[in-house]
Length: 360
Image 1 (tube, rainbow, N blue to C red):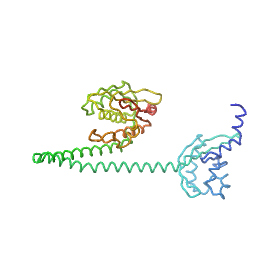
Image 2 (cartoon, helix red, strand yellow; image 1 turned 60 degrees about the horizontal axis):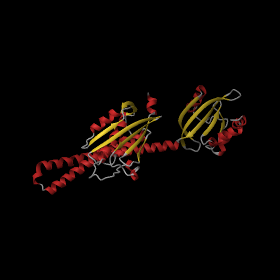
Image 3 (tube, helix red, strand yellow; image 1 turned 90 degrees about the horizontal axis):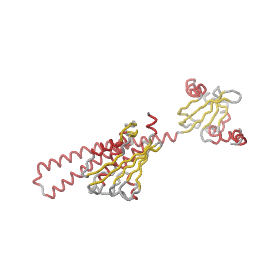
């Protein structure tokens, strides 16, 4: 950069423009905690008749001594240590209460006097939006949790009643009636599975175990595969590599993807491959099978709740598994997509590992 350019960017007119253009509340205080400079955004929070009195005041002259000390505590900290940062709730002159993220940094003028530059960002709306979102999620999770548990009891009673009728009166029932009872039983089992999946989905974004652990991908994949109930004969080819990821979350994701591949395969024998590659700050994970695949037009929809490619009479399941997978991966800052393929389903996962490295 040329000397002329440096001079232009350091001149008072340019710095004044920057100071008054930023949307945050900007101010400068001296060692007496008096405001000696404030930008337009800061002055605009005061009624026009009070703005001239802001410069030269501490703005807390009318406060009690206790409140004044509390308000100026982070000014003192900035002067003593060079920096302070806090989230504070302020009653503005217009009578409204706002929440501010305020950062203050000490600096020295050419005269040698010390000052602090303060930048206060209004986060009231973000905090309120976050609060409402947390309340909404809490209410939704509570509803799903309660509904799941309250509905399980009558379902269990229905299953027990059908079992009792079959045991005591099976011979007295016509084949047609037996078929009806079997249909009722299968629907009750299906509904119970749906309630379990709903409960799991409501908890999937709140996986309590966020710890990043070192584990072997091939070993975990083999363990998960052995626990899945399948009448098919499948070959699993998994990368023999160690990764550092949230073990519990990864296991849930892997179990759902492997189960999905088994359920939707159209042959008695099949192959599933699981590969992992290290790419800077993320692990790139690919789960692929040689089954019938998924049409490209379903590429986004399959990650939505209750999306199914086939009816439950053809393939058991609630259509919640891939929604759970997506939710868990996104909870840890990752992403998942379905790759276009001429054969089989191929899922590509990008899972950040930076958090794992920070915890080591």
